[in-house]
Length: 91
Image 1 (cartoon, rainbow, N blue to C red):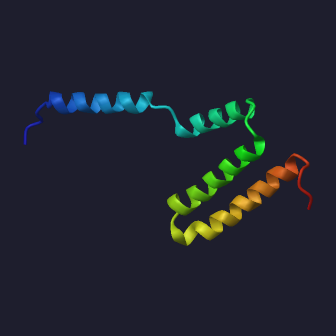
Image 2: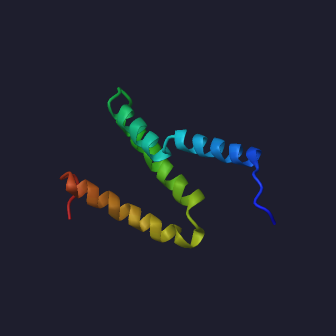
Image 3: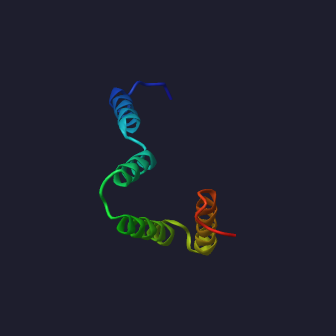
């Protein structure tokens, strides 16, 4: 089979690559939003509630069922470690 050019396909590939390159990383956006909220007058207790609910939603909806319990346990360990690192939690 001869190697024929497909300009429409090549143009589509370039367009998809351009869109993908221009799309910001959702993790970076989330980190920036959290930072902005922290610098605002938002109620910190409500912010913590939203963050906890987001973590639970992520585990429940995006982690395979067979890994949810382990992931939740690791999340609790991570939270405890981070609180200890800031001198908030005790051993």
